[in-house]
Length: 452
Image (cartoon, rainbow, N blue to C red; front, side):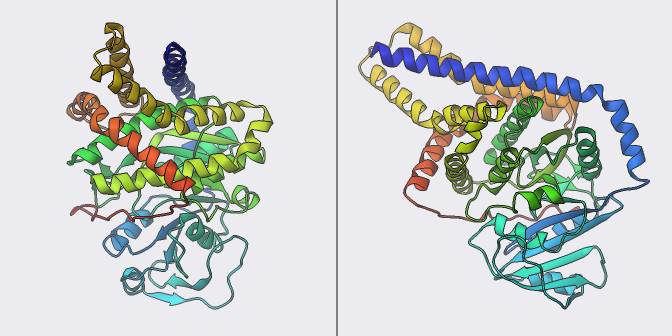
């Protein structure tokens, strides 16, 4: 038993140290980023003189509740050389009918190229009232965003492409900042921060009025998102951005062509594409000063489905990304960290909780054990507090009242989100992958706001 205690203590100590180290490195990354503010502002001013072409690709499946305001919001992004490709991934509701009626779509003639893997494209449509809009209608995939994104890429010819979700809303300067960050770093792909759209309002000019989610589940995810993306800045500062999120992936088109498009057999196509870039020797960067807002689950059931799907995707991609370990670089270190502290963590934590439960039941828990438990449980709110304070200090978005509310809520998030539900969902998702369970439950959509 002493060996178990020693091993478990060493593991948890390394986990805590690694998270704190990531936090410190993320602070350094913010410092380095802010040092370049003046030069970046100059590049932003120069960008409008000769803006490169950007295409937003947004898959949609059964999105009749939000399709019009979503498309309007994406078209209202004030970037001067912008195109939008909406991919109707075999919708069975009125999604395509709404698009055809509102935007007066007419079918294009001619064959579609077939450079990327995806289900068959049925037709391609252009808008008579909005020349920047193209709609690709295709055979339904098995809930594969990678498949739908690849179909949209077939009609893209611009230098850059932004892959997002149809329910996502960009801040007005998001694309400008992503372009400048790409040129500043020479990266082949750039990620940015994400935040929940729940509780926010979209103004008529396309700007986002920040608000806090009303429900518990979405509110908890706001804490989680801020913590996650602040720590992601730490990975980026080391040149090993661990993932470019699927709702905010900015790529050079040539980079996507080199990796052969997105994987179509995984719910983690964004993770797979990021690591594929590294395997081919390409570079990523991170833009921390802008946000893309996306709807997050607001019920326990929908959140459970999402988290199990993420766990399945992580394990699937980890298993096929072993070649990164052979590169002997910082990317190998990232992969080892994910194996140890993402994939293995829920199993080790579950064993630890089992031992704790046994000790409590048998009244053999030593007093020092409670101190260690308290220290471990406190890690999540401590990280959240430092991440929230840093995010708001560097890239303010919320009012002081909202910030204080979020800081206080950080202590509530641990139960039941982080423990025990997140632990259970991650375990269940991993087991689902091992047993071949590919269940997919779509996230229920909500209208954005009456102010759209």
